[in-house]
Length: 453
Image (cartoon, rainbow, N blue to C red; front, side, top):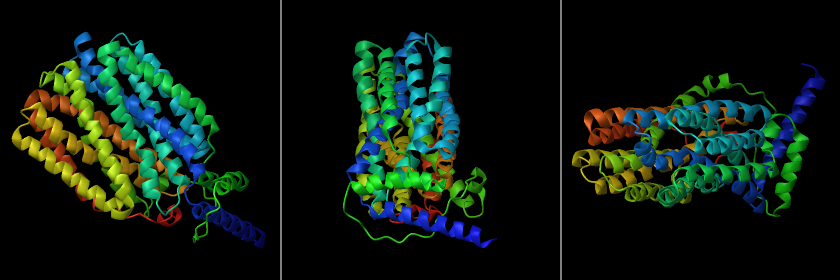
């Protein structure tokens, strides 16, 4: 290697380290509010579009004479699309940038939300939900990578979890909107609201700055410096930090399976699958279960289902406040075990009344909900910037797969074995999740560069 080449590499390392150090030295300030609000709004409508079908289905079951098998397939179609979208838009985010990728996910899911209004039968809605899922699946992992990269080590868990709370808030508000809108105005309004809101966020996305960490990873130091200067101008406060030497390194998805990252990858993939198998299996079916199994009126079924999302929001808020103190590993393990205990109890009592499902099932879902949000914090932390978006995207593809499988499995077991068998299945999956959570690495209070070199 020539002296000139060594000098260039040294200068790149020096400048990259300096820029990362400047990001880490600035405490969270007013500059961080705008990206958190706009990207958070995108995540809100991601949650809205993901759950809206659950509150439409009780109407469509009677209108289109849907069978349990068709219901499971319809729910699953959106998640299969999300698996495709997570990988595609994750790749796009690594190549062209986080904000570039995120804005097109919003546009796609908004267009298809409007299209769902005009679905006149099961087959068209199945197709439209699959395509919409491609956009829905791409937004959250890209947004998670983006917000993580804007965060500093100290307090990152709380900063990110308060941002990510917008997802359970989105689920909770979707349930409230569904309870009010569907009985009063009809099922098509659920999709119209999601489409209009998404279009507004799409235009706001053009005002966001690109992730400076992503720019640094691409060797675009001048552009990164301009963004960092804006962050520094928002506050005079500085905190001392030490950052390891950095340089631009080209990422490759195959590195996910390198000796250093292989164990992390396999564990986090399984965590995503187990957590979402239980949480989305419960959340997407509950409105229909209350109506078809317990024969509650439509309004009461939707109101009972909305309790689940309220409990989750409260639990996630508690997690956001405590996560930097308790740690990612310990919280996830305990939450899995709590959910398993509650679901086992529901199986023991036979889930004979809607009240038992409302209280025990909703609390179990609340515990699982903290894990589903926590994984959006943890997964981007364990990968370096050069493959953070694609690593998160591949991991979230497993949640889409789990979410596609769970409703179909639930529909089959419900018809063959009854409602109580569903809950012991979910309890068993939660136990597997707890075992794997104990093998997580702890990431709290460490810089992203320290966790994943």
